[in-house]
Image 1 (cartoon, rainbow, N blue to C red):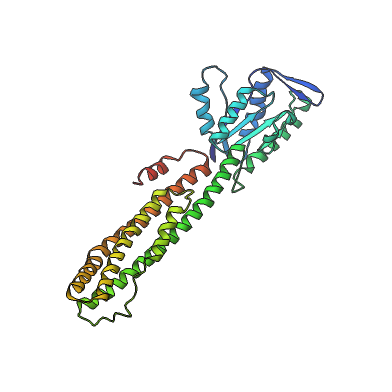
Image 2: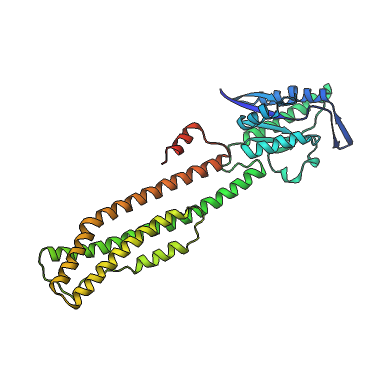
Length: 342
């Protein structure tokens, strides 16, 4: 049988709350009874899962040392807000900020803050009278088991305003990350295609010079840097939302270098077209050799590395989003995966 932990935060001392017939006093001894004979008994009676149920320690000075750890690590937390004790609300707030898996119970739902109504909260009626005990306890047990069984049935299980906020933020991160990713992919593909076409043009002419082929001056394919200039401008004006601007900076640097090379080729080509003398032929031939033999392999390697860096960042972003969705710190294996990304 699967084993899980349950931590209960509730009042220790006498409390008073407004009931149907006026003020209701719940004594310290009754709170002890409620934990042992109601909450603990009901939790440990849950079918198919063995819950180890314990209560928040009453001794002063133990709060920081023990309670926060229990709130962070327990699979389930039950918070009894009857009487509106500040320490119980404070501990509930800590749990909500750390992890999913919290059920709120109270003997007076009307005294519960309205913004907590929808978060796995239910009202129970307590009596330690023998004549009412069984009936009231069985209803409490059923309601508690229903709430416990609800966890995990929904893909987006929210049990607190904090998880609502993080879920909304995660939705925005997903959307913005998707938009950024689409734009980056478009830029990488467009830039790669434009660069490749220019290199193919240079290779075509370089082979013609190398093989002493006759060159038709009027029909030579054009070096086209206009798409690169548009992309370069777009990178600098695009408002990056999730991806850091240095990713765009790397793309922009490769575009700038490629554009500078192609403009140099275009310049030599115009000199050759105006006056195709021997020096012009040598100058263009040397430039084409440099671009095709020396720079093209290096630029292709840099572009491949850029694509790898982009995918690495996408992986890092997905890990961060997963942590937000889980509302908890990553386990050791996940920590190691992230730390190994270099």
